Amino acid sequence: MPSGDRIKTIVAYAHESYSEHEGGQVADYIPQLANADPSMFGITVADASGGLYSAGDADVEFSIQSISKAFVYALVGEALGHNVVREHIGVNNTGLSFNSVMAIELNEGHPMNPMVNAGAIATTSFMPGDTPAEQWENIRTGMSRFAGRSIELDGAVYRSEIANNQRNKALAGLLESYHQITGNPMDAVDVYTRQCSLLVTTRDLAVMGATLAAGGINPVTGKRVISADVCRDTLAVLASTGLYERSGDWLFEVGLPAKSGVSGGIVAIAPGKGAIGTFSPLLDSAGNSIRGQQATAHLSRALGLNVFASNVDSARSNGDD
Ligand code: DON
Image 1 (cartoon, rainbow, N blue to C red):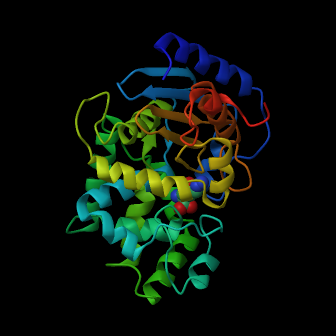
Image 2 (image 1 turned 90 degrees about the vertical axis):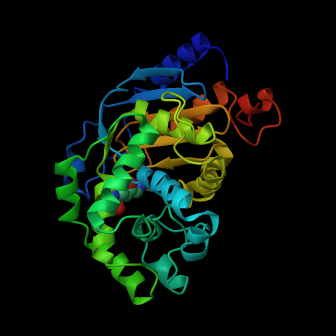
């Protein structure tokens, strides 16, 4: 990572460069998300020693949505080990959208990976806890350890999604018909919907990502959240599936494991170096934030973070020069 002053300048420049972009649409299939302010745009970079550098709406809270899948996968991996999620859920890309029914049918009822909705609901069902309420509290406290502060549910987003998530209920029912989910599938959907409704900021996303970058130790609190082995597994899954059917394009352009969410957040992780959290609710057709993708791509180059680059100069190139 460059010096703190240099990172600060680069983050401010990235924010200024992409703040005028107005394309894309806010998510509206969860009615409460349609109320998002499309002008919001925040960026935070966290380095692996706890330095934080922000620009724009970095302290505005939004529901974490699908980004929760990465951290719940890590918590379940920590509790159950390397093989359980791999065997029961898998780690391969579906090539289809995040809520695809076809992906399950084309793969003999298999949920395929923990970052699509079906695999995430099944992963949540593995979370330790004797009751759904205990599983939910273990998820909330576990994700709070990643963020380094107590994060809370947005009740309005939760109620709005639970009243309109017939598709997730159908996915969970389909998994049940293939014996691919443990416990009551509707309980798993409920806990999953709660985890998606946790409120975070770009600062939280950057700290959560930097914890994965720093081998499982939160660089701000100094406390271990998960093991280095689970971080490695999580980053591998994010690299292949974090941006759904666009994961290949993302790796090609940005070169970082990452996870997006439909409320407009993206977290990207540079192993051993740090993480980038962005928020802008205007999405492309795959449900990924447009300004978030542009700003993260720029920051990956400017900070020299591409994991496939053999030296800093090639990490800073966009392939055209
Ligand atoms: O399950 C859902 O539909 C949402 N709670 C989360 C979807 C999501 O964030 C997809 N990501 N881009």
